[in-house]
Image (cartoon, rainbow, N blue to C red; front, top):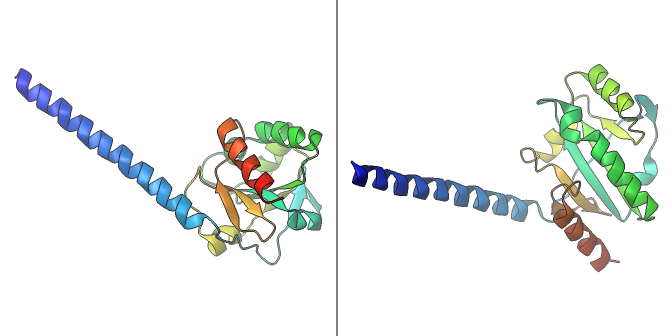
Length: 180
């Protein structure tokens, strides 16, 4: 009996280890596939700030942009982390970094999302992707791999959110400083 339990434990370790390795390899492959890929922007995007229509043509001209796509699965504002992003953006602005922040949201309930935006006083432009055009054009990877550092030509340089992730933010900064 002890031998059976021992063999089952070893088998479990191998299976779990293989699953972890496979997941790691899948992530590495996804990063490889997305590096340098262009994010296509729908023709008729609509920006809103605090739920009101706004124009943001200067965002597309920035040398670097952090682009985040959120879909309606689950709580959009929870996935987006409005409070954390607000603090992160404020920090970048205090450091006078020339970087744009672009958020695209496809939600099943924009009224609820607007309420969350107002609650967190998130006064940065958000694209309301009413018809899920961003995902149709780009076929984004699964969450949480929907935050990208884009260059001036909207090509993916880094995948992953720098918010609450100092290592990822350091990678973003290395990429941005190496190209300036």
